Image (tube, rainbow, N blue to C red; front, side, top):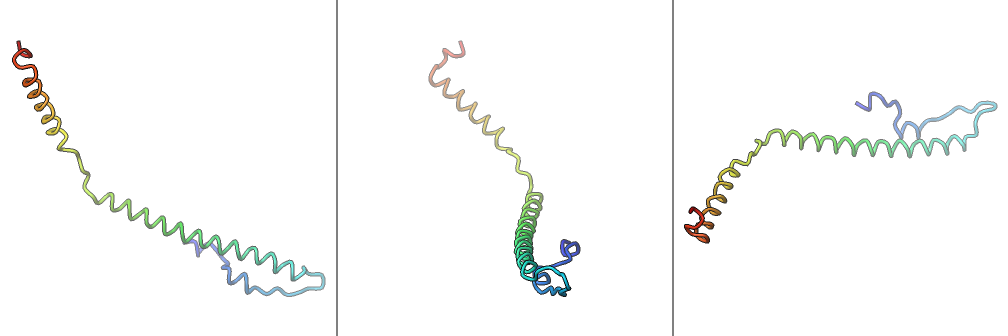
Length: 101
């Protein structure tokens, strides 16, 4: 993917040799600049690898979540019924027949 779009690696930048001309650039300045470029490339590739790993991990999580059956709370209806029944029994016990008169 990315390797198709990127033309240089940090190693290629490091090993690049420039011919010197009559009034060319200072070799020392070019070397310093290329050192900075190399560090940026290394940082870029490191970040890219981390993001690709995270992306793969998140895709796996999404796939796993999609495979798991959706859990519906089927017990909530019976639980609510049980609570209402217990409440009714409690009211009968506390208030006795007064409640229904």
